[in-house]
Image (cartoon, each protein chain N blue to C red):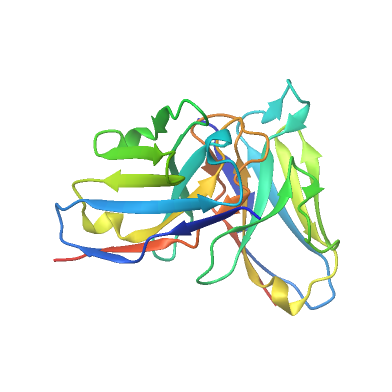
Length: 120
Length: 112
């Protein structure tokens, strides 16, 4: 059965970077896109962007455009989210989810979430 | 960008009663190539990732109880829980994956 397992919680200082991993299993990794969604404390869900299936072309939400990178390592079936220039506003739980815009199954499989705490 | 607006923001329903959550989209989420609405409903409980309940506006995911149903078309969609159970207390989100950027409604908190 399809599964996504994310890396552990992170504590970062303002201005630092964080890299979150998302390891897929139970399905053909390259056949699906991979989205990243974050949830700030007590708030709703925010789609940050995705990497497409096969070609792995990234698409980012404009507010993150200058400081985000999404990649995938096909050899290990692992996706990565790299977020730079962290501020306290980036304190959130970050989720990876299989799928993305235009993919027929939608966001059908989710990782467990990675808590990122940005604090001086 | 497609904006999803849910109503109400919170809802209290008695056990065994019906709960109805609405989702209004600023644009159509109908995908002509496969004649489906790319609109999903998620349930999220504290400390857990969202769980996909309904896909393509009204198709229940495998294992989701029959009391959950989705309906609607065009730009107005509804999630209905026919007979509320205690374990249904959660926040519910609608989500469109028709076009980038994907978006979520603001969430509806469902309580007993």
